[in-house]
Amino acid sequence: MTIKKEFWKNKTLSELSPKEWEALCDGCGICCLYKIEDQDSGEIHLTNVACRFLDEVSCVCKLYEDRKSAMPTCVKLTPDNVAGLDWLPDTCAYRLVLNGKPLPNWHYLISGDPNSVHHAGISVLGKVVDESFINMNKLEDHVVEDLNEQE
Ligand code: SF4
Ligand code: SF4
Image (cartoon, rainbow, N blue to C red):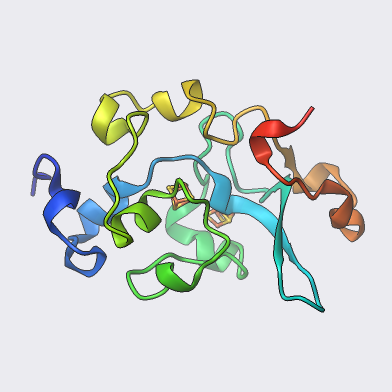
């Protein structure tokens, strides 16, 4: 089955076919970064530490089909849970469609170029460290306010 042009414009998330659902992801990789929850406030803080299964060059999962068994804490996005995942970036295509907003010009479905998410500086490319190379007991040292405003 082929995907219709601009399929996301006239459908809700739950109306997307499995193929359309997968196609909607912009490939930014931000959802594969570790987050820390403040025990007191419940606030979620983003870190620049990436899951060890994230390919830091392509910014996609190396074990996508088996991600839940490989990484039990991996959160699989579904039409039912996107609204409750406050830590997804504002740029996340699932969030945008959920909120009736247009996809940005750098989304590959608009630009036609899978690399435009990297060229626009939206993806995690060049901004993160693999969890295997840091002390995970000191994850708080890696909290970033804005991934795009690191040194
Ligand atoms: S944040 Fe959203 S758009 Fe970006 S990789 Fe994750 S699911 Fe895809
Ligand atoms: S297992 Fe894959 S999809 Fe899940 S957080 Fe890690 S890199 Fe991302």
